[in-house]
Length: 185
Image 1 (cartoon, one colour):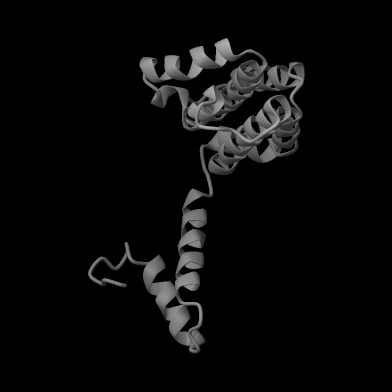
Image 2: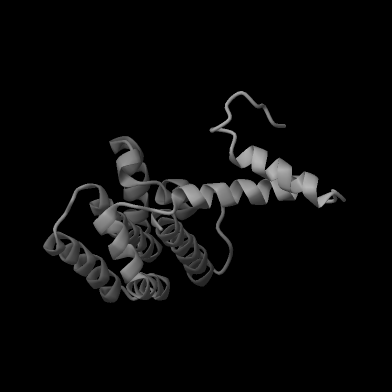
């Protein structure tokens, strides 16, 4: 759940950057554009940015005007959502969770960015699942990881005519940790 919500927030930010650049500049982003230079940093977590990296992202976007304002508003919404999700590991009480949720939703509602408002509506729609994640700290990350490996193995095995062999190969790969002595290709 946590991964999917953050992934959704990052996709929202990329959509905002592309749409805003196209509307204001009338073209796709170019290497010389500040929003294009900052695109990777805008997708990173604040705590993973050094102060120097943060300044290289923040200051040029502030100086850029409308494009920068829109992108930084969307970035703050993403980080506010991440702050809400981070409460899962802190044993936060309902009041803290409610305040963080209100802060995120209020920021999104105050923005005039359609993608940010759509993100807020999606988070609100998913709230029972998100609240369960925050309360318990449990996630479906392991099963999602196993499903990803199964799909990858199936993609690599595309064209095999023996379905039993493909199932055995999938089983071997997904249980590799439990059987550390086996090496699969």
